[in-house]
Image (cartoon, rainbow, N blue to C red; front, side):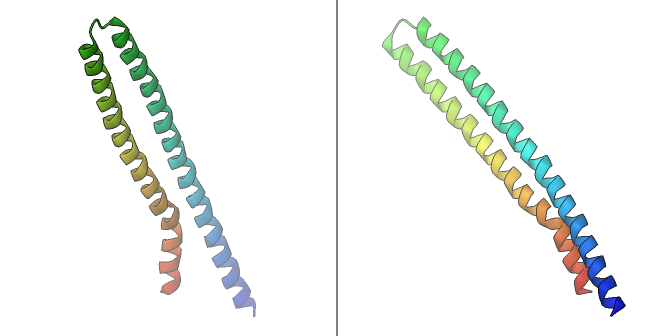
Length: 110
């Protein structure tokens, strides 16, 4: 009977440690995602401001269309790159969160 309690206590301790490691990974990667979003917001605002300055300085409709097209393309490219990066961070998050639990399961299976 005592051995069963010790086994349960050991498993509980191992799971608590794994949960702590999972929360560390969650915190770290969530911070990286928030930083990436903040950087995107900042660069998006700066790009928009620069595009508006260019638009106010143009003298022809054709040049305005060119400036707007360049801005739209650069924003799409930037958004695509950032979305890919954030998606990769979330994929890493899933892997990192379950890594401690997978290690516990492999130990338990032995």
